[in-house]
Length: 166
Image (cartoon, rainbow, N blue to C red):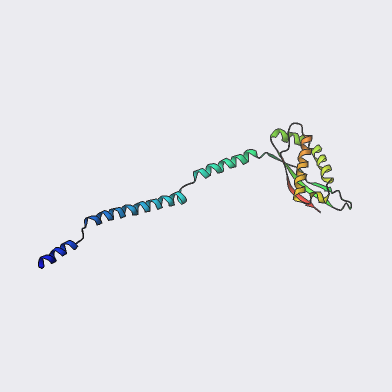
């Protein structure tokens, strides 16, 4: 009977060779997960986004390349074309020109440009320029009229820096 008990005891003892292999696998998994997390954190938060900087430089260069020469005009004060004649418009314009040649021509033809703009602005009524749509239409008319006067250059855009109707 004693021999039977000793045999059962020896059979119940687990083998220790498999647990060492499990610890190595767990150790490798831990470092794999920690390394992946560290790489993700570096990539997402600490890395310098070089692609974004290049894109921003290109966009800035495109904007600078497309912006022409700005030529300010003196303030215009005109009576609006109303039945009562009590409303007036006070506006200041700046013209965007493509090059220096256009700027020189605008300076030479300044009297013609002012005369043409005074006639155009005084022909407008309050209802013509009261809305945003009306202001954009007025800008288009100014560009068309000024480009008809200019021989060598042209006006790319008109900017209102002051626009008061009273």
